[in-house]
Length: 112
Image 1 (cartoon, rainbow, N blue to C red):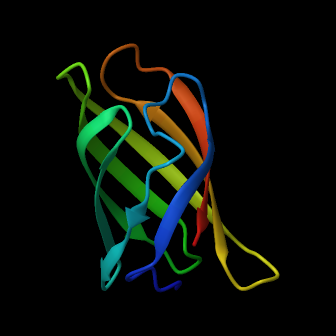
Image 2: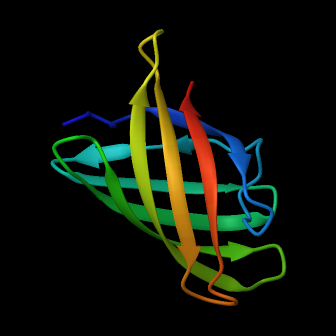
């Protein structure tokens, strides 16, 4: 299992229908197989995520956030880690809104 505790991830890309801004940072906290993060920035005034991590480091995630329009938006995400040559982790994310239009998208995050 990958230890995500205190790892900081920044977005490299996001689908157009996403709300995550590329200047944001996600600081992951982990206890056992539970990963959490609180985040904000760009179009997101406040957000939280919670995930279960499996033996291969994959994250099965749920998130909720308040955007700059004052709306609560929610979604699910499956994050798959890639170990980079420099030892850092890149996360390949496939997500879907569970509110609003329920559209799907993809994101890339990389460890700082």
